[in-house]
Picture 1 (tube, rainbow, N blue to C red):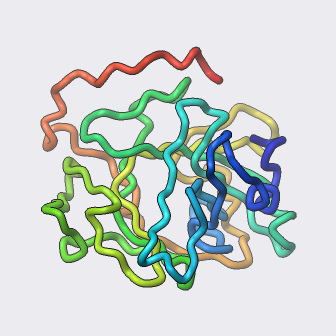
Picture 2 (picture 1 turned 90 degrees about the vertical axis):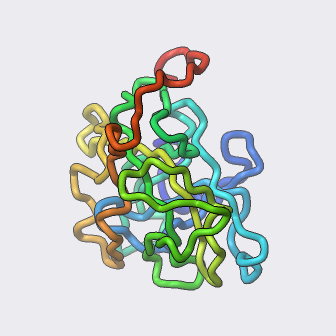
Picture 3 (picture 1 turned 60 degrees about the vertical axis):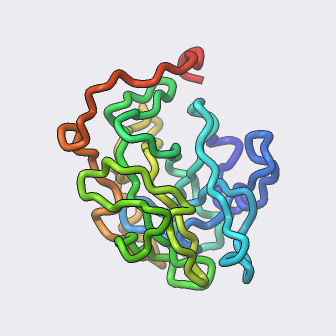
Length: 229
């Protein structure tokens, strides 16, 4: 990743990411999100004026560390070609009680990314959490994060990109070359001096309440990935 997408401009210029018909796009515009930095998400196409009628689909990560679905960059005063990569993320469709199994990442490190709307491509780059009034198809919003909410369960909103609940984990690269760290926010706080920052709700990432969700069933088995690849 460090060699493939060393800066934000290199990622934006990439085509057919992971051998898929996919590209990177600004998840929060060209703004640095407090806690994370500038975020790029893997999508099937980039938003345009017709997004409300032809919503983009964010693509889940592959089950390999070298194939993330999110990239994080440290915003500087210069152009995106001067924003170095600082981390990567992996998000997967939400199945209640069944956390993903990703190479060397422990399942317990995954958190629930709540459903909501990103204020892109025409907004301020922020995000608003979905409310019961935004739901359709009989979907339910619950505080314990037991119920699945898909993109299609959210009513479209003009100028915003919607997404349902997902499992997500973030990996951060040590600026001194040490071992990467796993945490929701950048433990080195490289976002603190970003020149163009935006804050998002602290409740975006939540821990599923396993007891409330009655998570007693064994996890669904998956073929091994062959180690940390």
